[in-house]
Amino acid sequence: MAVKEVDLGLVTGPAGPQGPQGKTGQQGPTGAAGKAATIKIGKVTTGEEGSSAKVTNSGTENAAVLDITIPCGATGPQGPKGRPEPLDRKAQPEKRGHRPSRTDRSTRKAGNPRTKRSNRSHRTAGSERSNRGSS
Image (cartoon, rainbow, N blue to C red; front, side, top):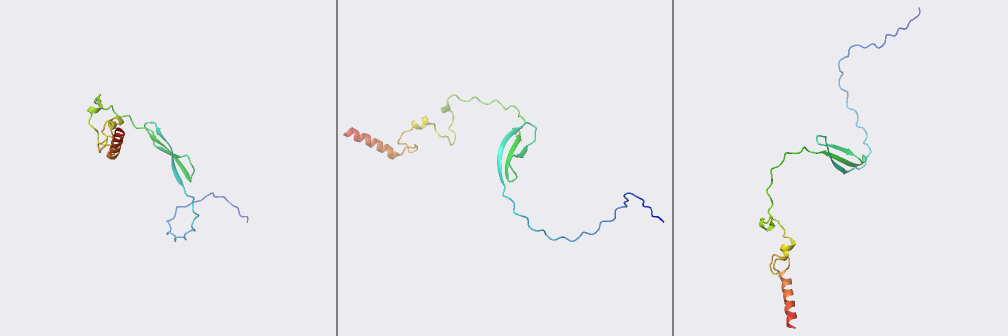
């Protein structure tokens, strides 16, 4: 008798229960050392209001150049009106850490210990004048 072959297609049954976890395998060999990488900041720009911050690498994988876009913040409300500035600057109180202007420093007396000129140079200049007058 002749055997006739019949194609039944793909026949699948229901999935069986999960089997037990297998044993941990051996550790693989150590990989090759990687290249050292550098990071530099490239172009920093202001994006449109409401947009997202964005960072892109315009360099390479090992020499990254990060270009950064930071979105513009929303415009705030109008602030209160300020006081007018006095016309005479000397009428204003001296601010802490204020360095006098060149004209303010030149009006100081040479013998004043708070000036940059030393008392010694003042005496030397005075003694030279007295020597010239006496000869």
